[in-house]
Amino acid sequence: MKKIAVLTSGGDAPGMNACIRAVVRTGIFNGLEVIGIMRGYSGLINGELKEMTLSSVADIIQRGGTILRTARCPEFTKPEGRAIAAKVLKDNGIEGLVVIGGDGSFRGAQLLSQEHGVNTIGIPGTIDNDIASTDYSIGFFTAVNTALDAINKIRDTMTSHERGSIIEVMGRHCGNIALYAGIAGGAEIILVPEIPFDMDDLVDRIREGQARGKLHNIIVLAEGVCSAYELLDRIKERLPELDFRATILGHIQRGGSPTAFDRVLASQMGARAVELLLQGKTCRVIGMKKNKLVDFDVDEALAMEREFDMDMYNLSKILSI
Ligand code: ATP
Image (cartoon, rainbow, N blue to C red; front, top):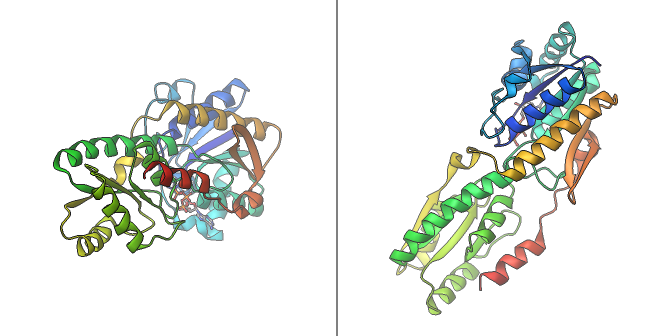
């Protein structure tokens, strides 16, 4: 193998740049030519390629976002789109492709491999931490820290005014950002899509907090449950005497300088992807399981069921009594 390429796809996540850097530098260290593909699968179809050098990835390890940009590409979900993408790779002599993204991006890589024989390796990059084949995806802990920083600030003002607050965090159908940021931020209540919540129980818990003189009531709500304003209306209906406010953190959670953990994870995964390609491997997805770097066949990875951490959830309930 002489030439490989790297792209970022789906939602961006802090640490993607550290991962690109690791792919480029490990590739060059091993005598490979490394091509950066702009704007995910869209850029691949459009032939937006650029030669990566050691210095093209200098000074990016600390930056959020992705220097290669990212995109969603409906065309790539069709066989014709993938055929064009495969031709671009072939015409440019690219034998291996590293895809940094989520489940959808891995599905695309899998089809590109199966239909056109391109060697592909997937690396989990998403703040949602919703990929079953890894304990942690690149960007997750940075997003948790961003949410935590916001929770701390909201807590200051809510305590001063003796208000309650609902803080909606991202994660789509996955409650991990809410769970981790909620525990770290000392939230009274954490609502996640994996565990259905009961309004009567929620109201009781808020009342109990009031009765024991709590100065604030922080509810961390995962976006996959409902919107913060919907929950606010339901709380106001049941507890009109209390002053609750809603805050939706939104895209702030996708930005920012990656944490040390995300930079190290991204560096390890990026290097491993190149090593796998050099070993002639394809259709693999890299993960971190029990603190060990692992890789799975993409079919196996995509078939895995994500397990919600019930121990962590139960701990959050104990600590918030
Ligand atoms: P995130 O978790 O951040 O959303 P993702 O990789 O899951 O990341 P998607 O939008 O699902 O994000 O996928 C990114 C791109 O991968 C899509 O725009 C599309 O080009 C390609 N893709 C997704 N699903 C498929 C599929 N089933 N077949 C082929 N290509 C796909």
